[in-house]
View 1 (tube, rainbow, N blue to C red):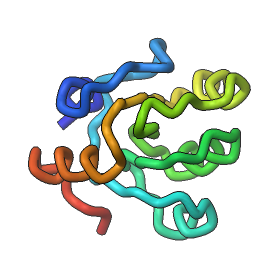
View 2 (view 1 turned 180 degrees about the vertical axis):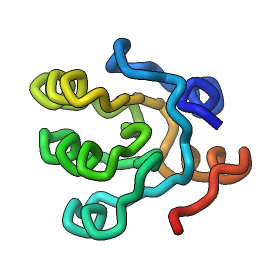
View 3 (view 1 turned 45 degrees about the vertical axis):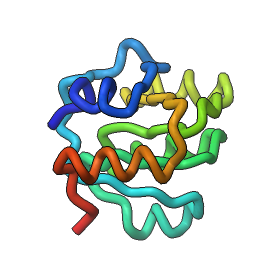
Length: 114
């Protein structure tokens, strides 16, 4: 499954239009504690978080994550979006709750992290 495949699944809007939507989504994860995600993040991960600051992009880039998903139409800070564009990190914004996003991803076959 690619980022492009999950966009309609979670009713998402692409916030970083230049990002590669053909990247494979290898697993899903939700967590808002950045140090925990630094320790447990993985390549190809679709990460659901309510955090909006630049450190989110640093953690996503560190692990070469597929995308960061903002639930409940939370808007990421402008500086964070600009950094995501520089790092080629896809940011998606969904009107759904984090719970619903994860449920839909799991039902569609996106596995949990290893």
